[in-house]
Image (cartoon, rainbow, N blue to C red; front, top):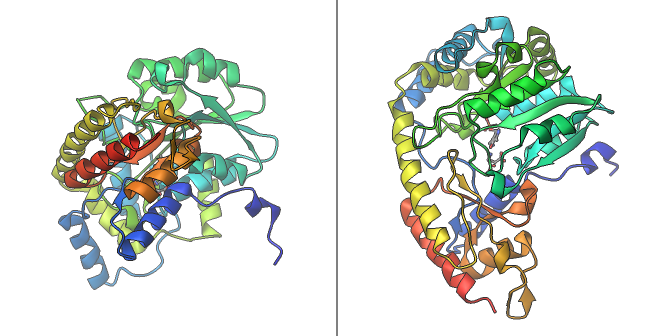
Length: 397
Ligand code: PMP
Ligand code: GLU
């Protein structure tokens, strides 16, 4: 069967693939600790589920406007105003089937062959492939652990060319957990405010921040950048709603119009019932978020401590999200039963086969020296998983 060249240019999402593999092994009865899945292990809070039940019972089960119902747009507008100090009207907001879909749609309407899109690394696995599918070129801004995995202003300035169409910023970051401060974003705004390019601000982990680290995005720190930024967010991570598939964009009306036109020719509206649930999530009591973040923090502290106690592993303490991104490169070159651990893929395969622990190779995020572990799993799993990694490391020759 002949397939397009386009589809041959991308690979299946590695984070989803590893999660599926770990689940398949579990289903076969294998004892696997999964640090692969980038999704909260908590159940969706009850008041949100209840809103969906009510929507079904009320017959709210038909097509809605393509970019989402006004009630949800208004809840998003209210959220952006009170949390981020950003004022948008309905024509500047569109709801899609998850933030991944939002980003995909944005890329399709903004980028094409000949364009360049700046993506800091380590990056979320989907950014480069979403850009590649448009014909544009992802330009990776490689950051260093020594710089806290942050892009330096001079690095950003030096990477911009006449072809640059956008910068993708994700803070707190998947996979490093690193978050940018207000001052750091202001420095980026100074560089970008007079350029003919956009910032796609992926704020999906906005609420998952620890130790009172304050959240800012580039639009909220600079008036000039508000018209040059598209804020992307969703309910998946904040409200443990990954399966509901609701994400959204807020930004210049021309971009939102184009996104909505594209969406009218592919998915049409996001699920009506999930939209009602998202209204309840955004407008309801936020206590559930605080509870989840408190638990994530306990787990972060435990996993960072546990990993740093293993000789050969160094783990930074992330400010947010629910991932750690330890450097394990000191173990490369060692072997098990004659098989050499050459990099993050071999090390991840070794951990899965020998220790029953699923992690994602750092190479998938652009940094082969590292592994990504999601700590959106129980404390018992974290303790057991870290212990297994330790035993696996000790077994290496
Ligand atoms: N951005 C980042 C950085 C993510 O980690 C995810 C998680 N899959 C998404 C966007 C998309 O989330 P969703 O499509 O579930 O809204
Ligand atoms: N964002 C999550 C992750 O990185 C979920 C899977 C995905 O969509 O990539 O693991």
